[in-house]
Length: 454
Image (cartoon, rainbow, N blue to C red; front, side, top):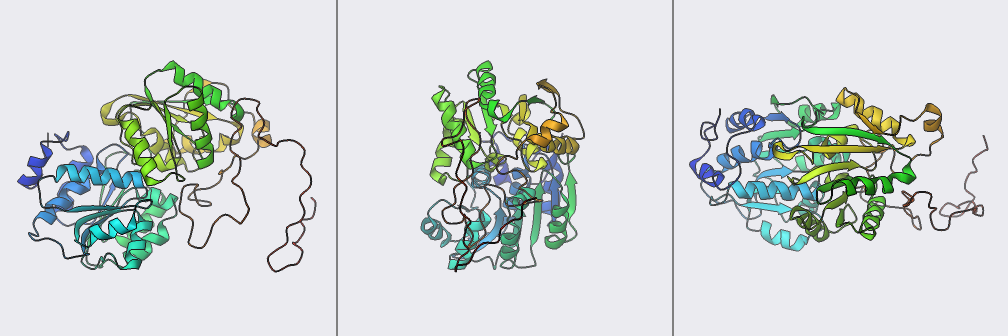
């Protein structure tokens, strides 16, 4: 069995590792660390929960320790980019834990927190900067940080960065980094777009793969329950009551729908919280801490939490809404069965979500077991209305939690679409016949073109 000492890591890092739960390298760590320590560009493919952070963080820290002097003010020696605040925070905490007691200086910058405080920390320079793309661009534009001496670039969860629309931000950031650098790309899935990124930013990379892309953890028991959309909330209540005291993570498609579901669960007496793109960073951090500490039994989230949550106590994952991008299903259910534990993942599938389920099963190359209801007929699927947010993702529009392109936003006066109806059979407020809306007038006057009846 390989040990961290046999991989050639610095004695200072080995001493710091003694205080962590890292005892022996995982397969991705054992294969990736030697290549990174030799200075090779690397593409690492491994399912979530396999230890990718240490796979790039440990050899990166080892190489930085050899420099022997602190970084210059505002300068960054190594940059790690991740798509969400939660994932950035997790990476920061992990690297900080196994570099404790060493001279490696780590800084974290994310949106939703004070940019002025982050700029102050960056004035002193940083060996490792862990960042979300949007906030890093803000700091670069302000002149608060420079990447001209950055010799290492890590793209973590690169496929999720694409899903969230960060490709343009990545291109902009890459222009600030010297071409002579070591680049590492890590991902749990391998869509075609990732190959294009690898060809653009990596030079003759070593490819390390420890599990087929898209393969969920073997110990996750997956199931499908066919249920009309309006009945999902009561079904979720039934499932949660079957496992009192066991932590559950519930995924919704939209921010507004997830918040409504969270409030409904609280009204039914569940100790629940929610995280999504409309929450401030402090709110998200506080809720995650409460969930991690066991103060909450249920966490309702959008795909912003599909990666970056490493909570061993999560026993159940419920896909209240099926994901738009099939690869996100793998990341969602990967929040359970962490560190060798067992877990359950149940998907609630309405008639309008049969396409999403079929895409997931195609990715998994298997049929998921049915534990309730029966597959919807073609007639039911054809008659089902689309749900808010459906059709968005890598192949379509921006996901619900992705940043809007600069200068864009919701049209003035527009309201977010309603999501689900809450209790079965309930109608949204103000439902019923509505008067015909007057034709909208475009800015500057004139009549909007009329659509001819079919």
